[in-house]
Amino acid sequence: MKTAVHAANGTKTFALRPTADTLADLSRPIDPRHLKTRKQGSATLTYCPWNTIARHLHHRAPGWCWEVQSVQEVGGSVVVTGRLTIPTADGDLLHYSAVASEPLESASKAPAAEVAASSCLRRAAALAGLGLELWG
Image (cartoon, rainbow, N blue to C red):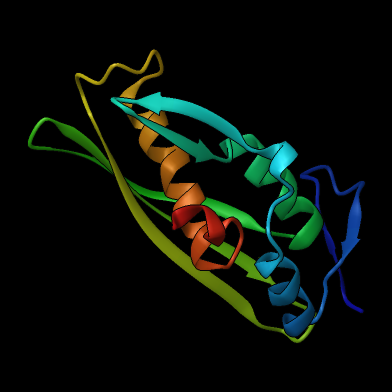
C-alpha cells in the first residue's frame, strides 16, 4: 500500500487504501451513539456533528482533505461551496463537491458561515456515502 504524509510537519504517515475498500467503509452506517438530535420547529432532527464526520473520515478514508472553495452572501444568506477529496492506493482522487447555505439572521449561536461550512462538509461526506442514511 502507498503511504502519505498526514501532518504538516511530516511526522505521521498513514496507509492509503484501495478505492473499493474506502467506498465500502464510507457506505457503512454511522453508529447511532455518534449521532445527536435537535429540535427545529416542531420536528426533531437526527444529525452527525461535523467533528464526528471528520473522525469517521480519518478512520474510513485516510488522507482526506476538505477545502472551502467559496463563501458568498446571497439574498440574506451565506452560501458555502466546498470539496472533499479522498486519495486511494489505486491512485484515484475521489472528489465530492457540495453547497450549503445559512441565513445571516439564523437562530444559531455560531456564525452563519461556520454553520454553512459544517453543513457543506456533511453533505459532501454524504455524497461519498458517509452518513447518507441520515438524509432520509
